[in-house]
Amino acid sequence: MYPTVRHRLTGILEGDREAAAWLYDTFAPRLFRRLKQRYAYPGGLDGEDLLQDSFLFFFQNGGRVLRRYLDKVPAREQTASHLETYLWDLACGVASNRRRSAFHRRVVSLFDRHDIPLDPLAERHAIDRDTLERLETCLKEGRERVFLYYTLRYRDGLSPEEVTRVCGWSRKATYKLKQILDKAVTACAKLLGLQG
Image (cartoon, rainbow, N blue to C red; front, side):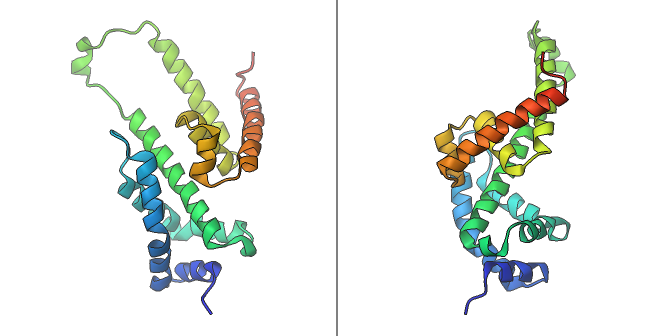
C-alpha cells in the first residue's frame, strides 16, 4: 500500500529525504509549467526562481507552512489534488510579493533627476499608493485565499473566469470569494477611516 499524502508530508518534517524528493518530483514539473505560463511574459518573473522560492517557503522556519497545512487541512482532504492547489496558491503569493517588491525597487538616481519631468500629481499618486498599501495590509491580515483572489483579480488583472481556471477553484467558490472580499474591503476601509 502506498503512503498517504499526509504520511509523506509528516515524513518530510521528520527528515525523510525520499518523501521530500516525492513532493518535488510529483508537483514541481506541472507547477513550473503553470508559473512559466502565468508569469514569464516579456519582462515578467522567472518561473524557475518562483518555483524554488515557493518550495523554500514551504520548508523554511522548520517547515512552518508545511505544519500549518497539516494542522489546518482535515486529514481526509489532504489529497494530491488539494496539495497541488495549496502549492499553487502559495506560489502565486510568492509571485505577487516578488512583483510588488520589484515595483517598489524602481528608483532613480538623484543625479538623473533633471531628466525627469515634474508630475504635478506626484503627491496625489503617492498618497493614493500609500492608501492602497494600507488597504492591502489590512486585507492580508484576513483570509489567505481572499487576499490571493484580490491579488489575482485586482493587482494582476485576471478576469473571474481566468482566476477560476488558474487556481482550479469552482465558479461558485470564486463568486463566494468575491462576496467575502467586498465585505473585507468595506470593513478595512471603515477601520482605516477611508469612508467618507
